[in-house]
Image (tube, rainbow, N blue to C red):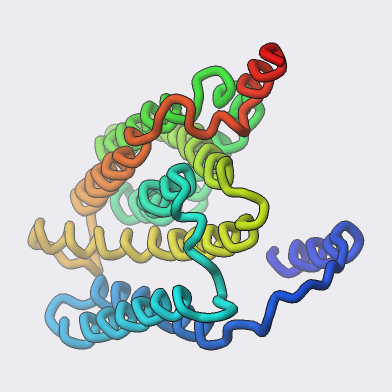
Length: 305
């Protein structure tokens, strides 16, 4: 599916985007290699750690090498003349929210499409078709809330919605953890639909507030850093899900290769805790943070002038 969509995007870019040339310097090959290889090794190490229970030296060594390369990448970016990206946007509180708390929440949300089908198939003995059909309700919730998202942001503001919605996401994972063999397919579909609503709401708010206070001259670097983190978060969501299953199996004295419903219950509770941790940054926001991109703020300024 990605091939035709990618071709359409390239064609649209050729027609819609202007080719503005500027003095941006040479491509930062060193920063690119340090960042890419470092994160790839870090991810691979975590995945190996989730799939082994005795030989820990190799995965821990790979994780350590990955972390060292990423630290070197950060140092390089801070001192390079034409770095791959810049951390200047981090001085803005609203952007930092998406880097720290936002990344933690993306990791938690990225685990759902991985954990839910596995739980339905391995924990509840659903067929792949049945599990896939139920998972569609998660994405149906994503789409259903889209028309109301802007109104909700303008009515209640970023801080209130992020905090309340973050709690609802954590409760959604708890609800998934409470599913058992007697839970009807209808109930599971409702839980997934509501989880899809809160999932979509949070991602939209994070992506919107990220650039609310970033000035135009820093937007390019902020966008690059944000895109890098977003891709990392998606990968970490799946990788940490596998690690959560392995950890749950270890705690329960079971095999990670044959997880049962108890394993997924504990994994969902772990993701609920991760989602709650992410709310801390949202609590640090003021009620006015991010209002520069909300219609109510613009309307208020218009009335004052």
